[in-house]
Length: 91
Image 1 (cartoon, rainbow, N blue to C red):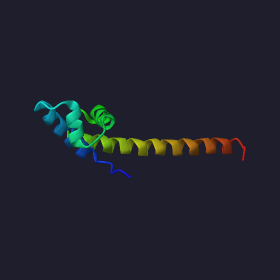
Image 2 (image 1 turned 120 degrees about the horizontal axis):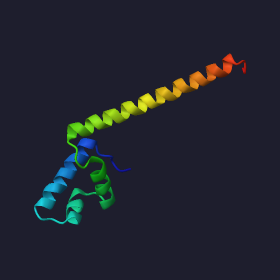
Image 3 (image 1 turned 180 degrees about the horizontal axis):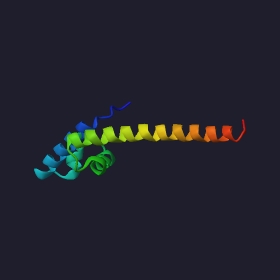
């Protein structure tokens, strides 16, 4: 199974590609130098393109917190529906 790089590592690789391209290498050569597929490179570029390492870390933390809050809301909504059913005498 392939190792999934951390967001900070992805940002570093994207910066490395930018340096190689600015030195006159083609995008394809820069992607090869990173050791990733072009699909991976462009997905990383879309997701992490203009971000700095600390911004990426903050974004991932916020995504994790968002997922936790969504789960909490779902749990509370379910509890509320169960209590509504119980109060109607449907149990």
